[in-house]
Length: 261
Image (cartoon, rainbow, N blue to C red):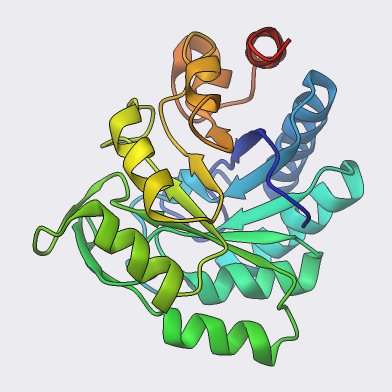
């Protein structure tokens, strides 16, 4: 996809078939996702990311076939519903599944939480598999599908401390990431702009802030980063999960535009 949109909205899917809290109505999941996509497009967002947010507790590596199938169906729905660029994030860290969904749906980018190195998370040790991911992308003919890769990703801790700039260099120079993502410590937690500046200084690749951005902070964030990925702030009470609130989505876009006049 050309460039990086400034505003990327996240669709938090309810539990999918096979997940512990799945309620047995996949068509409802599909329709809720379509509604969220229409809401984001109407509000003025430039792209969307879909993720299996409701599937917790997440698999640390490969998700089961039913998850891949469900996400492919939903992603295809979203491609038919909106003209916005679509990204896929298969939680917790299944880049292969994300690429498979992109191949089936025509999504333009995938998010990979741990692409290089290793992190300690509630799923245990998450290990990057850039060597496999890049080879699969080439084998599937998906070189046009961008890899959006986190550094120091939320809900995790480093196996050993390293300078943030070194992590950025590894994910870009050795992992061949196309876009670098920076987050706070948890979903909805603010991202330290000093960290963002450090990442921007360490790479020529686009840098996107991927947690904790609100209508009150979006302008300051976009002065530093190429874009923001936002989910929690678009929902009632600023809580993740659940449908996107149209009024909050519009207010977020208006706040971002107000700072760029």
